[in-house]
Image 1 (spheres, helix red, strand yellow):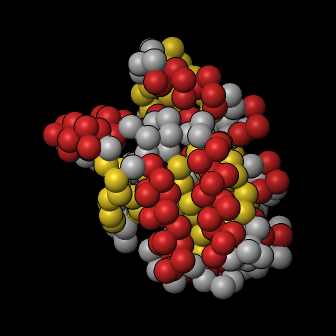
Image 2: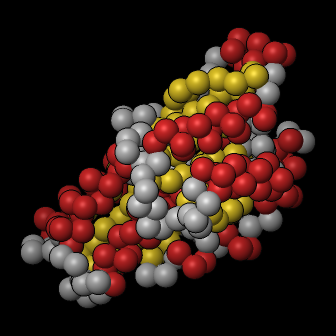
Length: 287
């Protein structure tokens, strides 16, 4: 491998996509008790976690520790290797900037070595798909600068659309106002959200009811997907497997031959979107 690829738990990667990727842990608290998500999706009890959120448990997340980047990147640089880290969107977290600061400091110390921080402008498998692509480039012994260029070009083609089960979780993180959350809950209005060109999570449309929201996500897929889904299509869900399977079947109605993988959604960003979150990730013409 010509370089080492890093991602963190928010990349939401199942085991078969984590090959060649070093996973950084995400720290958070549940009702004040420290917890760590190490990126092992298979060990995450999503049902218990999202039931806890429904019952009112409070989860607070924090930035990845800048010292973590310095430590992990330094160990690679000392081995004479370069680094690519695929970060969650700079529009929703300061983690990207923390990693970028560490990278600049280390490149001053390790002359001739190269570190690239990819701003995924998304989260979840929108980040994970880019990290898996980076790992493939590394296995092919691609030059790190060429790989970095191709990954940055891939960011606007990595599409993610999602809806939520409870608007109050978006209200807590400032994505919607309290009034919008109250009215939307009463009228059963479900937003369809995506990561825009600046990496902010915004609403692109609304639907009346869960079924219409799922159909709205599929309409976005129908409009924007590229024929080349070389990594397949991914769905993640906040403990709503039946809805995820419905979404998968509707995607297959559009592109019957494209592989679709369903994953439970990790706890770190899951605390912000809540139980019932349902997301579709694919390679598209544009965001």
